[in-house]
Length: 238
Image (tube, rainbow, N blue to C red):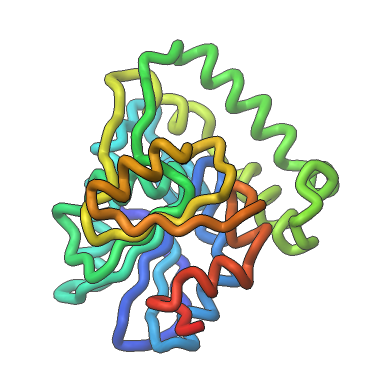
């Protein structure tokens, strides 16, 4: 399976952007042109069951990781890449990291691990309810006042294209644990519902460079765009 890619820029460097659950390649609409201006050819990818990528009711993290690997090999052969993965996208990145030509991996508000064993039908139904709520751009702005009008439209469109069965499938098998590797960067909200202080200490001890943004939402670059960019001078030079 090759993933749908939204390409921005023509630079010699390659950046791969991976969205979180219910998002899409468009979730990076402000980040991609900024990186392109820094000399990157940016490939924002739709993960399976999201955006315009294929659906798979039997998806696993390993299958998604292989799709990522195949897509990078097809679109950027022989290139080293910088990759940014948010939440679920970070988990896919971590699962593929050892098989990707990474120059830098950046994880956003994720430990890349979760307990699985969910009931498939119940979780699919829950995701469908979430999808229906998120399709309302005005409702998104009401519940997330830090969203701009464009943020809300982008995320509402992503919800329309989101396939609940594909995403539910990854939580119905074995537990998932693919920790960020030493030398990678983790940017987290502080406080975070996904990366606790204990998690941050554990990952730091493993050689992960943990950077925190006080008051940020889970989609850190939506709520704290300038702070997110300033936290990653390796990418944005700020």
